[in-house]
Length: 196
Image 1: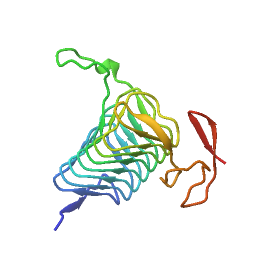
Image 2: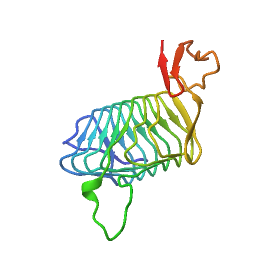
Image 3: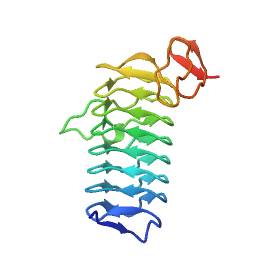
Image 4: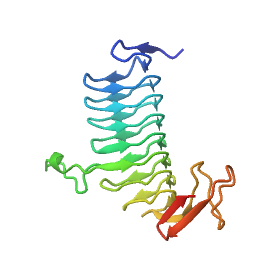
């Protein structure tokens, strides 16, 4: 039996008894925080999110509504997730470009904005200071070293665009029509796709 608890600070939120949410964090209604998680002060989590086992979030991270953070994900200061973002198991975000154990670089944290509807595959790595455009899809194990356009399908190390995906997460063919929804897209340039 999973031991979920209600915290009077957060109405309509379920938090596993093994997890900690620091004072100064904000957690939206309908959100579930599972086993062995730590949410640090200054973090804002939206409504109806799912935070998987062994996640560490914060400080000062923002997570939109409807996000799913899978097991073993750490979201460090500078990460900003839009609504409906999926972070696959053990995906990694960095927050300093040149870390050294003996050099304090907290003043050098870089922002990593992640757009609405983005999917990040298991074990992918997102280097800090790069933006992920809405509805892009980062393949499992990919290493993102530059900004990612909206709707881009990125794979490999370093990650390269291998095509486009729709808002529904379907790979688009040459006709740029989503096979699931029928939505049509237009390629503006080699790095820009828009929904018609």
